[in-house]
Length: 183
Image 1 (spheres, rainbow, N blue to C red):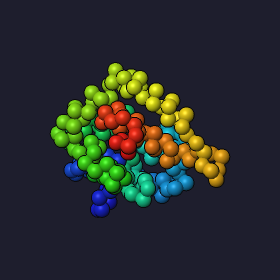
Image 2 (image 1 turned 90 degrees about the vertical axis):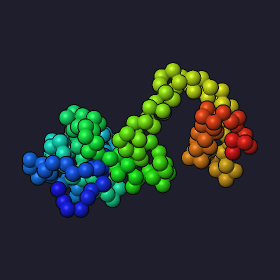
Image 3 (image 1 turned 90 degrees about the horizontal axis):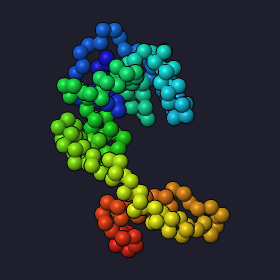
Image 4 (image 1 turned 135 degrees about the vertical axis):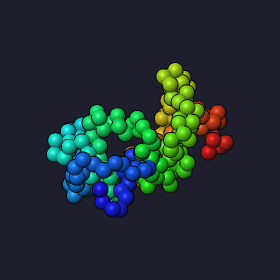
């Protein structure tokens, strides 16, 4: 491993025992040209990378050096996180902290598990079905109001969908009716 710590989606919170062999460095290949391929065919990209470098290799993502772990054994090792080896906060902080300060993905170990237990009820199948049932009339009503900008024949998708999402979330999660109070 290099002397400088690497950020990774699953950053190392404490030292990992020395690898039995050097970790291949595929960072030079995972630059900007690689990202569309990874997004277009993530399974093919992962298989190709696994075949070339094995289950563990160095890479880079959005300018950060990352440790890429692929395959069922690597998934189990990272996701089970026995011994609290991997830090979610250290991995995600660089990418999402400005947008989700103290969010559940930016908490580690017991604190993360406690917050996950609080939140998991909101994402069970029955709850999601209720949200959809509540949102559908508002979605229909809001889409009917969408109007193209005067200077174009299109609806500006990003700000329009963002507003729709915020309006729906304020109704579902905060109990606020759409309108001035929600704004």
